[in-house]
Length: 145
Image 1 (cartoon, one colour):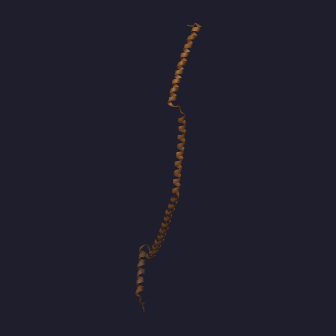
Image 2: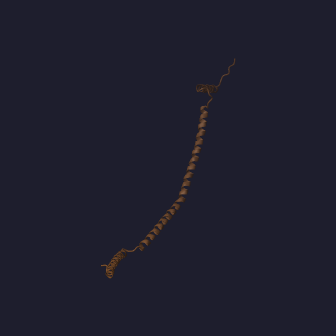
Image 3: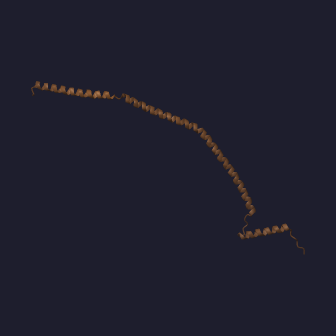
């Protein structure tokens, strides 16, 4: 009887297959991925994540660039709007002050008011005195005394 002699490499491979079979049997007997498959999958996922990170970095950089462009364009507009607001506020207040000054200039002075009050009181007293004098004369004429 001739029994074939296994080569050293074939014996090692058989031993690995046996250990792998024992490992699978210890985990419920399912044919799950091997360590080598898992390493390949992890390597592929890491490469994909690196690509995604690179793309996200590019997107963020573009966003910053766009923000800077927008800010550069909007700053002069904001300055112009602020100056327009200031002008409108000053014009509105100048118009209000002008109207108030016009009304104030139309008011009589305190001297005019004082002399007018004095003249009215003096005129009223003269009128009352005249009425009293004529009333006495009228009574004397009518004989009602």
